[in-house]
Structure formats: structure tokens, C-alpha cells
Length: 133
Image (cartoon, rainbow, N blue to C red; front, side, top):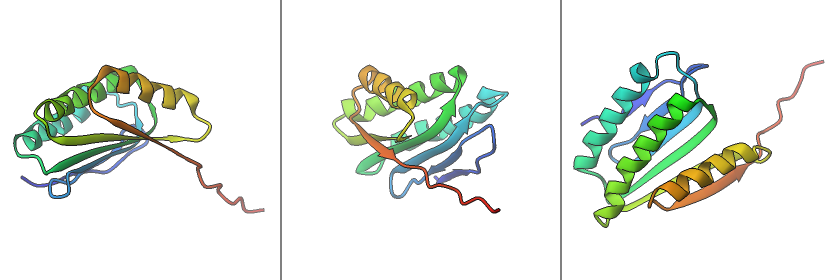
């Protein structure tokens, strides 16, 4: 099984699921026009990974925005991660959010409430982009 790499676009997140390290990154925006076209291969890969996971699985979610269809797929992924926890495996979700984005923090809290996987919340400040004059 190979690691999964999907480049991000303005409508889909970057996916970097590393089979060897057990670290799975989802970063960017997730508002795909065809959510199943984007998410089904990602979720299928993750289900295959669960058959032979590493000692520790870390799912890092760093999304600036996602729509309801993506929310359902993310929740499905988290429910699959639950299976590892229920089997006594080491798994954690790192939920990254921008300092001023209370909504994204609250969504992470909601997800954490719905699953048994431990969540670690990591707030960050976006670097300011220097403007040319």
C-alpha cells in the first residue's frame, strides 16, 4: 500500500496520508462540486490503512472552511478512526484552527464530542502577508 497524496485546489483540500508514519494531513478548503468524486478515494484508502495501521495514527485536520457534504465525509473518517480506539490502538486527532476562527474551533469541539478519539486543539496565528506599495 502506497501513501496517498492529493494536491489541494481552491475547492479541495490537500491530502497527505503517510502509511509509514501513520500521520494523515487534511489541509485547505473542502467545497468540492462533486464531493463523492473527491472523498470516496480518500475514505477507501483510509479504510485499507485501518487493516494494517501503524502503532500510532495521527489525523491532522487544518481546514479553513468546509461545506456540509464535506463535513459528513470528515465525520465518517472520524468514525472509522473510532474503530482503532475501540481496538485499543493509539489514535489522536489534531484539530488546527486560526486564532480568530471561533466557528472552526467549535466545529472541532462538536466532532470531539461525537467520537471516542482524543482531540488536541492547536490554535495558530496566520502569518501576515506583506503588501507591496
